[in-house]
Length: 208
Image 1 (cartoon, rainbow, N blue to C red):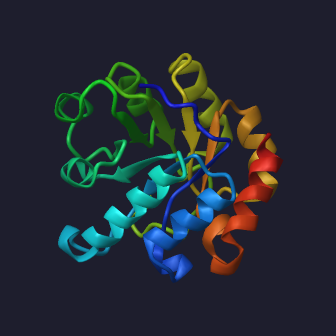
Image 2 (cartoon, helix red, strand yellow; image 1 turned 90 degrees about the horizontal axis):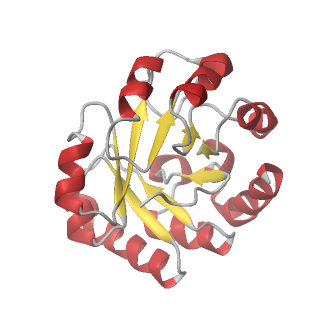
């Protein structure tokens, strides 16, 4: 199921925001977010399962969709709407078999070749990056830049494309001009927990 991607694609981060995933998604949906990715790289599933369940419940009550980073098993366990896979995760075809036709499956890519290959997989959108340097992930791939983002747009046809990695509000016009349908933003949205709702609303208006 290809989702209607928001112009600003929010991804949760408990370290950066200093608050739970559940509270982050409450504030994001209050700002109009209708599609959110839960991402937790530090904890074992058992350590944040309750928080993840709370986040799914909060998002669904708001009439929005939520997917989980990497973990197909957790997506099934918590009733998420899908999963976002990395290059080292379960292959998209296997995730699709487990999650079903209605699940949302996104796939991270970091080279033109990976993106072109992803376009042949049963995915609903392709993420490409890092477009710029980023500090929100320790294991970052080489910066790809806007020219390569444009090349990916040409290579994958009409599959929804998410740009990710170090994107600031001043970059949005260039990112969308290069062909992205959506821009994943973490620091710009979450760095000040008290301003998450206002930040998301403001950035979404900039991305229109």
